[in-house]
Image 1 (cartoon, rainbow, N blue to C red):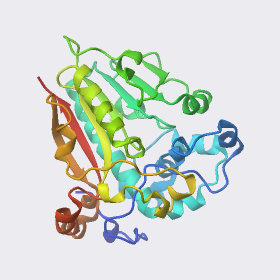
Image 2: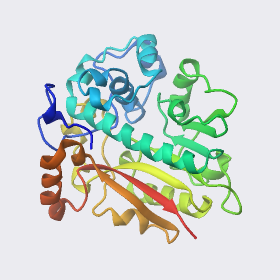
Image 3: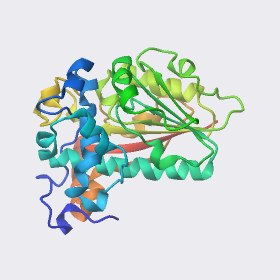
Image 4: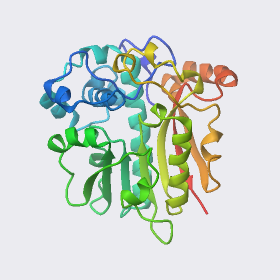
Length: 304
């Protein structure tokens, strides 16, 4: 287990199980961000970029070694000082990045010629960690986000591509050109900082479409909030100013796989684990009331 905030001389988040958000925008948006005219949910894309670029100064043992984030921040000219003051969220972004890295590397070790896709990619570049020299990658997000992303982040070589997608519209799997379930190799999907902003019925439809269409052995790595957080984004120091709202959470992690008979919950992780025994103990204490981690990452598998 990596060292926890309590073991380093770094000011940790105030709570042993921190408040978390996938993203935020700076207090004074740059002109590039202003011209992008991002709506509340897409405007939350900046904090994972800031956390991955600068978060290692606070939590060096969680340094994700993002080779592009710092350059993007400089090009955006974004003031992220206020964002970085929310150390709980910075910690959470770095923790979930580690979880995604572990899941992605394990998948491509087993499927070195496979396909991965980041749904709701924002300004992240996960392929820098997963490129096997033989696999393929897709980055997809809403049109307004991709309009900002394309001039800043060109595709990562000939085996990568970008696309526009609205996951709330049925048929996104086919529109993205993802392989069908019959005879195709498995696919890895990453969906971070996206589903908690959607309505429960929309999330269920997305998971069901993944289950119905994906080849056996496919994986989806997603982050989740407890249902108790729904409707309380205004209290969050990073998400609140954006106007975005938490609309979906889980009462039990088993709900994720219950959406479709082809889904199986392969792994569940609680961010409380990053705080060592104190965080784990609090997670165990709160589970009977919360039913799920305050914030966590789940890996779903498609089986036949």
